[in-house]
Length: 314
Image: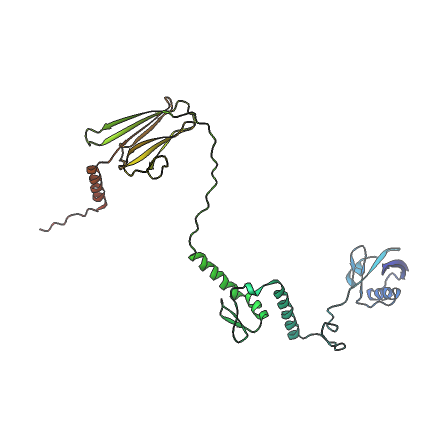
């Protein structure tokens, strides 16, 4: 005989069993000790490991070991004492009745969270039914419409409508970027020299600019650009002139007012150079005269026309 301890139901009791007892007889003995527990209402543990018919044969119940008796929680939904049901009717709901009750519960929950007055596609017609203006469907009640809004058809139509509105929407201007301006101390205007000349062969007018930057840093190089008369805010705009700007820190930006003629950008006609040793910036440009413009247009037309071989007939 082996004496073990049974711990469960808030009590600890002793049980004497034989060494070769069967598992079902062992469970019956445990049930009797605890006041006649049902066979399916409890399970046994030995050191956090469940005891079943297979493990009972391999495990050894030593003298004085402790077996935990754990009760199972048996129960379910009380369909008899439901709200609105007749007392004593009993019985479970059928599948159709459970589906109706579930849809009604979801409809009430949706009505509490969703405001149909703000839905642009919800409409009540003169027949008392409800319509979805997006999908052109009819619904008997609000719950049916709410179930339709969660369906695949309505969601796909919403995505299609959003894509069409995004495609037809006018392009919005980009938000201006926040450009951080450098607070550099200006030391004045640079020295400059302007020379007017004319080419002896083409008779084109030319301007040469020489700007001195003696206090410039080594890593910085001067920049230049052309500005329209309508872009500047210093003088009254005059369409007969344009401006040539030179900028380099820490000097102030200087601008030269030149005739508003087309600049000749061909090779050898527009020249810039930065002399890092003498710290001088050179720029030379040529203006296209009226004859030069026509000549350039004729050269472009000749280059655009594809020459075909001439056919000779004997």
